[in-house]
Length: 155
Image (cartoon, rainbow, N blue to C red; front, side):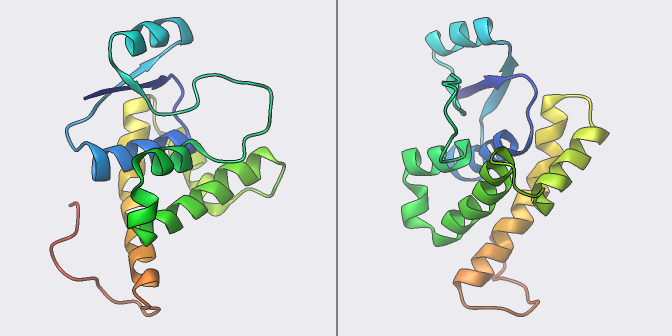
């Protein structure tokens, strides 16, 4: 399926792309467009993966959380729900004037190193893979530095 978002992918939308590629549509392709062509792409069947309109109201959820709720993955995978909490803290906390979250700082660093939306997503994928791996360990009750079961990795 083709997915679409506005140009200038940063933290939340890179998390959405990770969720799409790793849990919803491993064959997904992404378009990064300005507002007007994005509406045309949506009308032609591309699926948006973020809030496409700005209402002027403060958001209560990240786009990642919206996608988790819409797909119902958060209800079936507690580790994904925990990833959503991390994304929420990094995204919504920053929008509300909170201190810069370390995950958001990493995304800002990646953004400084890359020159395209596709490269931003590509570089953030292993970061979200690692976060998800840690969340899986946490929900399994593992607190030590130990590998998960073989076969689940995305490398």
